[in-house]
Every structure is written in structure tokens, then in C-alpha cells.
Image (cartoon, rainbow, N blue to C red; front, side):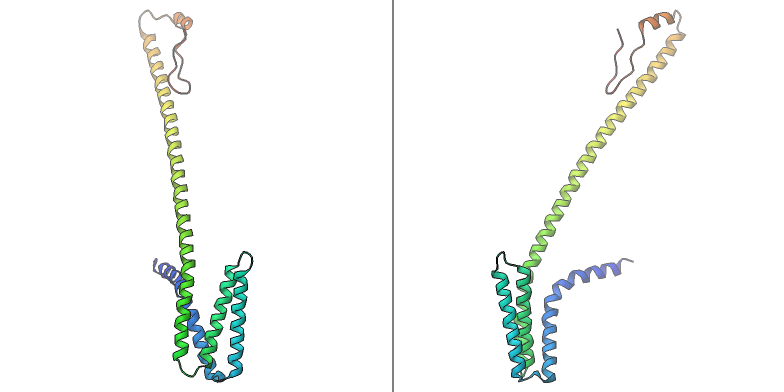
Length: 204
């Protein structure tokens, strides 16, 4: 019954790893479709794609060099620049050799950049896991201490109850003995029952 859940889980783990290859392959396919629809040897189309690629790369450079540097914007701009360049070459070139070569380079670069983020995410996940384990161990320790305290209180109450029971039995036994004087017991007082921890002592 758990097979569909496991399959979805495996797919969710594998999809981010395949995303760079899927992205570059999609750009290559779209470029070749564009080539088949009249982009081949079109100077105007090639110039447009080149300008867009250079513009995206320039925007990424400014984002990376700005105060504080925004890695997300810079990475997105550079990825867009690479995709536009790949699409332009795939649409303008005659054969597949150059587009496939650029596709391979773009895919390798995408995986190299993604590996850094995957390592960072992995370190964060491991640190979170360690923190969670430490919190659970601390919580378990507190639970063990509280269980010991509760056990000690229960044991103290049990001892007190046993003492009261033994005292009552002793008084009943004493009352049946010859020469028992209730007035003397009343004047001398009864032994104290245990209060809190331990067993109480008799009053003088």
C-alpha cells in the first residue's frame, strides 16, 4: 500500500537533480524548432538573441558587483544569458554539432553551479537534523528525571501508607493485650505519621 507514496517521494528527490539537464535540453529543442521555422541564417534573429544574451549577462554582472551582491538575481540573469545564447546558436546554426557542444557545456556549467547550492542545502539539513536530535535527547533526559522524581514520591507515599497500616495493626494488637490502659496511651500520645519524605518520629 505504500508503493505510490514511495514512488512520489523518489520522484520528488530526483526531479531537482534532473532540472539543469531538462532546462538546457528544452532550450536546445526549442532552438532547433525555431531553426526549422526559418531562423537559420537569419542575421536579424541572431543579432537579437546576441543582444539579449549580452544584456542579461550585463545585468547579472551588475547584480553580482552591487553592494551586498544579490546571488539569486545574478544567477538568474547569467542562466538567462546562457539560455539565450544557446537558443540563438541552436536556431541559427546549420547542423547539430555546435548546438550540441554548447548544450553539453551549458549543462555541465548548470550542474557545477547547482552542486554548490545542493551542498549548502545538505549542510543546513544536517545541522537541522543534529539540532533536532539534541533537542529530543534533552527532552528525553528531562522526562527521565521527572519520572524518577514521580517514582520517588510514589515510593514515599507507599512507605507512609505501609507505616500507617502497621501502626493501626499494632494499636489493635495492643488493645487486645492484658493490662492495656487507654488513658496512658492518650496521655503519652501516638507516634507521628510520616510527613513528606521519610518516616516521622514519636512525640516526647
